[in-house]
Length: 410
Image 1 (cartoon, rainbow, N blue to C red):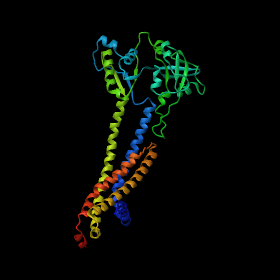
Image 2 (cartoon, rainbow, N blue to C red; image 1 turned 60 degrees about the vertical axis):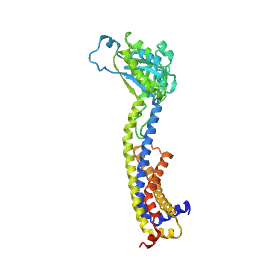
Image 3 (cartoon, rainbow, N blue to C red; image 1 turned 135 degrees about the vertical axis):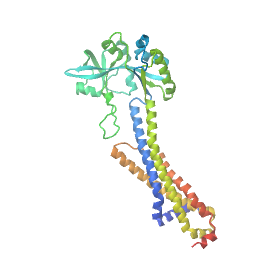
Image 4 (tube, helix red, strand yellow; image 1 turned 180 degrees about the vertical axis):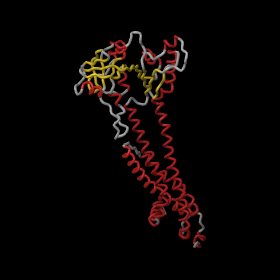
């Protein structure tokens, strides 16, 4: 007999004992469904999170912000050197090649007036590379340039939401905008950025970019700050590559420590946050996968017991086969193939159930799911492995059966 005949006989056995087959496959179905549902939902959420990072500057972003030092007593020299400064950004560019973008930032609230419209808004004074760092595109006009920085130009770029609030449907490019009593000219409006974590959610995760009102940092410092004030609020940085993280962050800390003389800053690190989120997510993944694996193991134990019971019922059949010339190897393959066929069918049913369950949950929670061919192969393959390992014992017993003893069995 060849493998095709063994598989055909396996299906005949399944059809003749459908009730027994259902019991055999129940644990496998639940186990595979649990694994597929877990992988589908977690992969969908991971893909969604990765999309957010890509649309908001990538995974290589880092920032430095002012933070009170832990030391209670500071010297006069330390107090004088405290706080981030514009020169810090230049020093980072010159001494740490691991960062390809370094942007200084000052953020303050001011009264802003455009024609008859007046409101209190947060003004962000930055450098031109900020637009490239945050993947901003222009709806009209242009973004800030290095020439604006060099000449302390009185120009401003606003987000799409601020454009509607201040100017309505009118194109604001070329219009005047008064910020804190100082006149600026609008030179550009950024294109609206939209990202919703859930399809039924009204919260746009990119809305803060649409609400930006940005001016050249040199112009802001000259027009709104005292001549002696040279401190900034934050440094925005982007790593040249993910591999540069290991060396660049310690180098950044050493540089700022040496320049300030005291640890008066904090660092937010997107790669670090991603790793932290991944480790927290693994807890849930492992929990659900463990439940699925336990279900598969229980299903395998059930398969072994039922196959042993089936072997007892078919002992005379095995004896007749061996008497007619079937070898122990052929009997072994027959029983093992039956076990694998049963579990693969259970895996296919579990895959269908898992996809349906995942589809229902994602529609209920309005999130995306992601199933790949690798996941499908892993689900069905794991079911086949369960059938193989847990079908070995009954198959070995059947292959070693003495035909004389089998024919005498009542």
